[in-house]
Image (spheres, rainbow, N blue to C red):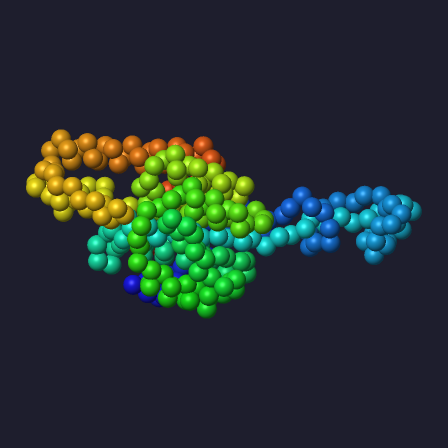
Length: 287
């Protein structure tokens, strides 16, 4: 179960982390559209039909020419958090399952976004996406999302292409999208799904359990493995060469996911569920 108390730990970030001062994380995106915003951009000569309220009369007094002030339209940032709720995310052991850890990472983005007076949206996905928020962006909405996430039982297979393309179709402005998953799926499907979101800035934390990286911690010898998404069982003798082949294959998969993310311009990072949450979130937040 996700304890909302972890949100209090995030308050340390403003004081303890030197976050990169990019517009996305600061929530102060500026567009190229010019209008009556808050940030002065430049002057241009007055043309008939322009709003006379925008004339700079002090500049007119010096130059005897009419100039209009132009401003950059400031936009607040919307952060979209997508949390993988497929069956494999239920793996990880008591109190350390991947879904819980992934949800806390995503909720951390939502919390800090709300603290900066910007908007967030939260959804889960497996074969499709499901919105959890009601459109408000405050602590109460985060607590409501925590309740819904605590009621979620990870199940089914992650259909990255279909689910993420479906969610991408709901976005009407450029945003920051955080997709938290173990990414244990066909790399082509993962890439196709993420590609549908690349009109936005994309962050892709990959959450893995230590026993996934090295099953020998718990599985050795005659072992029955169960696929949590398809419930397929396979009995084998696990150890020695087979164990090493498994570790090598997983490492290659992680590297492939990283390569696909970088090709799409997305920020990819890997965190383990046995990491301290503050340290794991620091890795993902800073990039």
